[in-house]
Length: 144
Image (cartoon, rainbow, N blue to C red; front, side, top):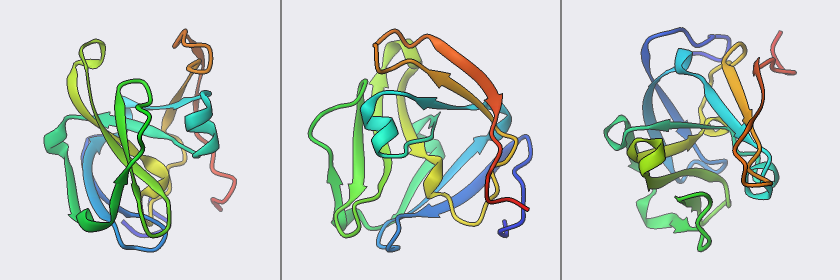
């Protein structure tokens, strides 16, 4: 996809990377399934905007040698970040309430894709209620 492309419904494969490019990934998901943002300090301070996919829908293309794992698990996820630039990219988890094993991917790390219009469910993780605070389409302040 080029920088002016908008995502469309149906399974699509998107490529992404960390800031410095040392870690590259690929993920296949359906944007119409929606995304989530949480108000816990891990997500807000790290600018995390995520999707959950089954492990086979995620592929690490390069950078295994520079990946680091955040030592404190966030809601059952073992977050991975680039040891060179510090970007949080993805994490693995296994939570029965979420359907078992999954990979959580930070959509901010996708390359050259306009995510305007994707449905975002805002969750209250800060108070561990996980209640839905709002559901709204994402509006990019950077899109034309």
